[in-house]
Length: 213
Image (tube, rainbow, N blue to C red):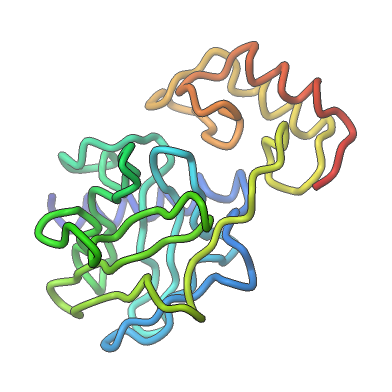
């Protein structure tokens, strides 16, 4: 992938993630990299967990924005907008993040399989292991104090604002019948992570109507 494509991907990801708030726990939103310092996963445009992939941006004071994907995953990682971090059924991560000042960051299982492999710990609701940047070295996801955790999802909350209301209904209707990869697809409105906005997502909104999380 050429750098101009990556710049377009990062810009597109910023636009996409303004539609839904990051679901990273504000109390556990930072990881440390020796050559990058603190990485903030929970900004306004921060990372979102979609079950089988991630989306959104990581912020580095030293290196700027790092994109984890545009939300239309799982990603094939073949280039362009189809690049990002997947979550495999085993829990291990697969794929790449990209930053204009960091280059590629490898979240894949090779050659880091085993205890060091970057992975999603479903029981603890957090990331573990390590990612590797050719330009900046190891990124530690495994610290006991500073790590990335995801707030448990709020059923029916398509906008990520902690309440189920007309905003969520409108988000479903605005993306109705769209599938992952379609222009205008809103991953936040795909409440059942099926890859399509349909009656199942609408029913989740209606079933949780007026609730807050």
